[in-house]
Amino acid sequence: MDAKHWDLKYAAMPAMWGEAANATVVTELTDRTPGVAVDIACGDGRNAVWLAERGWDVAAVDFSPVAIGQARARSGADAVAWEVGDALVWSPGRPVDLVLITYLHVPGLAAVLSRAMGWLAPGGEVLYLGHALENLEHGTGGPSDPDVLPDVGQLATALSGARIRRFEHVDRTTDSGTAVDLLVAVSGWV
Image (cartoon, rainbow, N blue to C red; front, side, top):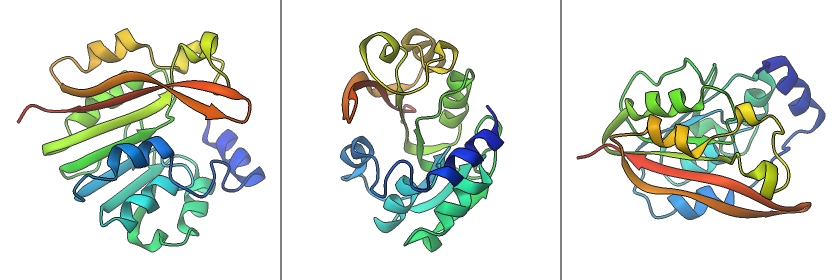
């Protein structure tokens, strides 16, 4: 993964993911009681701002300085602690109630999710949403490199011992067809 590549993409298309928070994120988190949240690989900040508007204490990190600059310029962005950092090594430094990871596609995703489990306060949750490996054959859009797409078996192994609330494929309608995403919601045992 190359931050400069993403800097160029964000510079060429500000708000490339839209202004509104991701619909699946909204569905999954609307009824959650606000607490401390981190948004890993936050991109231009749409989900982090949505969380902050609902009362969450949010830290958001992305390795693209251009994306973080766009995030800081969003309405409501002053309520979020923005940071340029690498999702593969960054950590929040305090227990959190929610780790949100959307559309992070890296070979080390299982390790990121496993590390994120260690950041949770009692009752906390990790929510991951991204293009599934199965999207290559059954969906549209997203990365074409199978090495960066989550494999259900690898993620299940990485999350062994976690309490699983959701672990499923979800279809997402796009302008070019239906994308196949993977939704994972896990917590520790209380």
